[in-house]
Length: 140
Image (tube, rainbow, N blue to C red; front, side):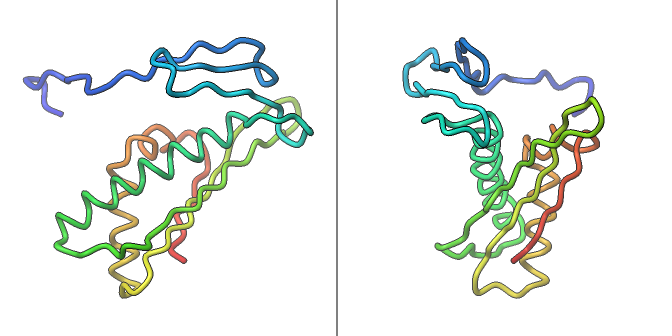
């Protein structure tokens, strides 16, 4: 972005969370209203790692759409992204690491790789994680 460009906020997601990992989270518009539970516990809710994986994979598919339009490639209707977000503990520190497994059936492997690489450069979630956590983008 150049200095003369003014960023434009396109959307702001707002949530209110209580109780931490074993609490509840609700969006300001009520469309999201979920119970949370810690990973690996028998709780009925989801956890932040699953939510992050769902958001990232959905955003990444959008970035694949932009990349395919630029490259003039038709995406397969059955494309998918399986995101795996690990919560890791090392000594006294917690951190995340992730893998995105990108499936583009029917596309040439080199084209699929180029699309995945381009999407990883433009996806806002990928930008957020770049240089902050270990990420692998796998074309499967």
